[in-house]
Image (spheres, rainbow, N blue to C red):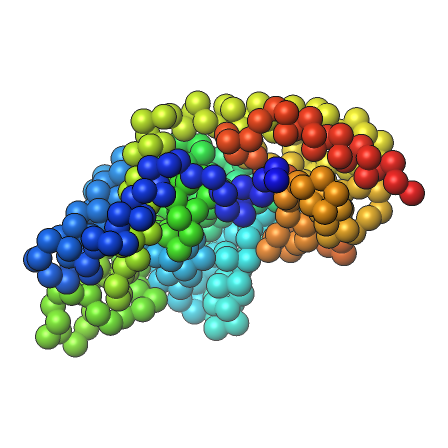
Length: 379
């Protein structure tokens, strides 16, 4: 099998990640719930993972990293934890439903929402951000990289706009954490939401959010914390404030192995290989007359993603043919990004997404291009 669905989840992980999870399954107790060695081993792994992520994201304090099950949970915590009825929030048409649906819920409860449109190449007008700011604007919430087109947003520029107007800036880094450099302090990011199972190369069921010092987020859940057990209220200090219940320490052990591996190997090195593969694929398919490629490829820096359609075929039909006839795994459909599909004009049939990992090879790229040529010739 040739796996080109890394934007959904990375299939191949560093070997150290696998062994860390296996070892943890037989040695970890409940982190923060005891002083015996199994509990302390789990606590150390969780703390070390916070430290590694704080280093990766240039966070000022590991305690500002709170863990969740995925980016969706992190985004729900962030969005619902800072916005109130009457607040105005700005977002974009590039967003995943993990951003859009919580915002729609809050809009139903009295918040005001502005969604900046995208053009037919999936691009956002940055001037529209400042033009959309109102007296009651509370926050800007946006993705760093589109999971459909691979287009990047300049989050440093958006962070500067947010800071100039005293707004909170929430970033969805699901597609970019572990792939692109992220400096939360230099980029003016107040809350960074991430998942562990994509570019961070960790297990599924891991994710989290960085919350800047001085930003208060209402917890989505309250309950067991391992501390202040006689208090009627959930602890207010980070990271406990946003971590009710037992953490998934076994999987966090895998994330704790993955992030140091990324730091040691170098995300720039890995990203360059992924982009080399992506550009080779793009150059191979863009000249095929029957294929339409979506997104803005004028910028060299982008997520290693290419989405396309063949003739007037439904995307599911093409993706199924790729796998059944050639053993190539891709992702068809709407990709939980309905507004972006509307902008691209692909709302009815979706798109076939190819997303690349540094574990892929140029030989696999050649096979995929040849497969698409064959599918495109079919009448």
